[in-house]
Length: 465
Image (tube, rainbow, N blue to C red; front, side):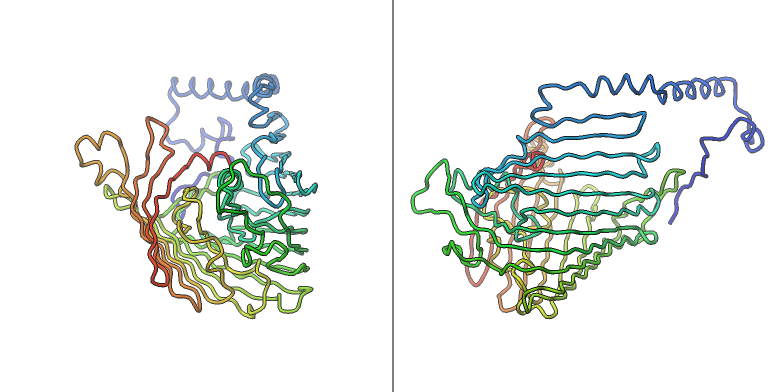
């Protein structure tokens, strides 16, 4: 599958080498051009030049208070970054107002960023619960060919009960304070974890992690809101008993967890450069994901489990007729009858009427924890983006450059009737270069009931998270 290759140090050979292998000598114009470019490269790699460029980039400005500060030393190939606490400030009913601060340092070990090590840390403080939490990470990438990456991390953090992050903290802040809808459900995780990933051979990449976790339930500590809604109240932090503020969906416990996952890119072509292997996307074939998760050594009887999953994804280009995308998932639990609710298979629902993220991996009208399961499951997502094939043929409307999108989503779990959604929408809404909006009308069917609603896609929220 190698389509192009360059020999090691091909751009480092001297003129004597090229005199022996070059079939046609360089012309005087080519020779002059090479000498000029080599001289420019020497200057641009000099410490004087790099320090002068960094001196401009590293100047502190008012915008750093909003977006964080980055300091680079290009000559020494390192970089330091500290985030701004303003974008990391959010509200939830468990912590109240909370803010996060992230720091990271990266040391590159070659000229092409193929090898590096980095350390990072994060602190989070919840003002209502008066609780400080912190995490740290060390990561090292060994080469840019098979891309082996080792990560060691640990600390204390809050995490969503659904680890697929169905709702962002920013969207939850808005729905809580303005609409009294606290959809974000959290627990506390104290952990140490080791992770490793590597492309074992072309097209086959393994991901693994092993962790020890102490997991504790959390409870609401804040009832703050900006607009009181008649007949609506905050729910508890227990998605199984939303009206019972003293309940929790699981018992405090310790557990070991092992995850083994594989990604298979069929017929993957690649290019070999002196500094690394660069894979090429091949949309003729799907990407297959295989997963195994094991929980063992739990301090609560019945919390041990095994889970097997598989996923198939593909974006199929239909030339001028747009792109058809699908995402098929399935899985099964072994010994999962009494596991912690955290380890159930949860699905990406949406109760906010706001669309963000990837539409090919979510259900836009499904309550977040309505169909969570500890047994067999299957979900299917289909979406076709016609690009300009249909709307581009309508006079007047074609000037707006809008795209017609249709979708279908299905979910099957044990002891429940299948859930289904169908949607039609318009993407690429906006003006000029700013096309960050989307509008869909979605119809869902479940247990003989049909529901419909508009979903307002605010893609710019993804940039803020």
